[in-house]
Image (cartoon, one colour):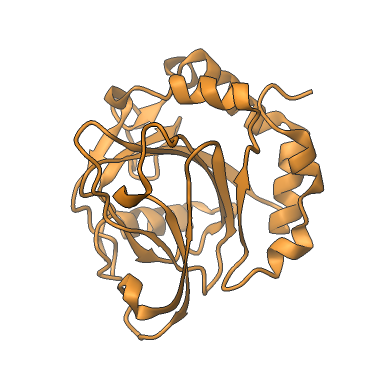
Length: 253
């Protein structure tokens, strides 16, 4: 029995259909979380004081625009090389009780883990967790995820009562890249599919060479925030790979 997940949705999801989706495997779920669980997680989203704010942080050699946002990692941040204390990193006991329970269930609930394995064709993998918060002017410019990522399941925590579609924030699946640039704009793609993230929505996608996605610049009023929680599935990494990833994220060559 799950405290959080809508089991029929997990169990009936077609991995075969998902993996045939173009331009890359993706799917928007409605109410994969039980309504009561979503409301509790929504009402007790981690306090912004725990987050680290990233502004104009370099994105390696791609020259893509920075992804300005508030960022919080669970237990260990990819942006901290050594010190894993302080802002931007949350230990389990720092989270609201409902979030402690949710993270534990995501980690250990076999039907959810089986859902990820089946959808993403997983063998050996690790999972990390992170919260993002966007504000006015925040943007997720078109990009593909780093090669160590296998896929991501994004849980969104906005509703029709606190967020207008016109403010941006919908996740965009981009197809048919028309330029050789590594830092394309949204209009450099032949197709743009927009997904409304509000009201107990989550978005699962597989990282591929064509897995370009983005979010338009947010135009929300002050004190309105785009909020999400990432379940990031990635390959097991050697120490050498971890060092290369840190150098990439820090903008060092």
